[in-house]
View 1 (cartoon, rainbow, N blue to C red):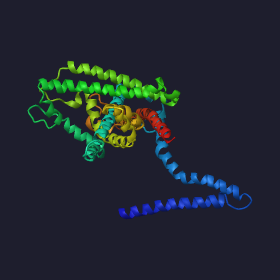
View 2: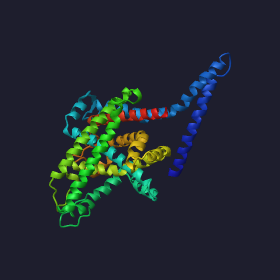
View 3: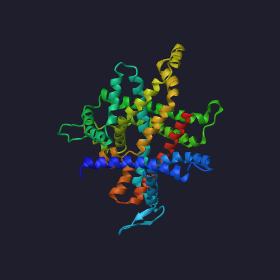
Length: 414
């Protein structure tokens, strides 16, 4: 059959089916189930009007249930079964979870996901906020925003290929086409190397630690110092405690890295295989997602900054506040809700990250993440039990963040 004709028939059947469903369901409701006649006419009309909205919502609810609820239930069932060699499956209970928890690769994936979870949302939100603040103050800010937002139009795999070329390594007797190695070979241990490779990273790490400490304090402060005697909702306390503990750990790690920067011996003059350097290769992969998500954070936060009443800023200027005080004491508290939404949205993306790791390292050299681990189990090892168990772990990690987003949205609506 001609594709155009097939598409036309599909449209006619789809639209006609929808129209037919709504028409005949109304006829059945008003003429058969609750007819508006006889001594019960008034009661029947009221009952029909109560059922009618659910009648119209039923197709959407059924589709969502089939698209969202069924995969969750089926994945849970598969995580409790094991595939048999001759076909079929058998119930094994929590054996798949025990097998998964016993594998070092799973804990590597989980720890890497936690590291991504802490670094990427914080960095992307911070850079997006900085870009939003700076681009609003320059004449060509619209052009700058377009350039920063442009990576959002690139797929994760496309961005991974771009950065794989940046990290490319060639033998010493060949020209380095990788930008990072071409720059790296220019350092020789002199004063400029000391400044760029030691002073600048130390300052950035210290600044990052300060920002994380401040954000962690914003989350924990309502539990320690309630404003106006209002108690913190019990549903949000676990997430606040988790963010506070993560902030403490990240500040400790950053400050320890500051000390390590000055004691590390850099291999000058040797091209580096950046994606094979344990621990640091995870950060090289994170840069890709930060580069993509910064534009998203910038657009949302720029709109929030523009929504701040000018009277509050003018009053702060009259009182003698400097630009830093205006930003941190006046603007930040007024957009903290938007910052949290951006942060949690990027966090959900990070928990599901797969494309970048798959395209750049395929989980090798200690870069495994949960989504790639799940893919390996499902489609390489053909072990649907452990693969489905890892999918359930990802869902459990995402769920509290979704609950937090729903809670925040309802709170803002009230």
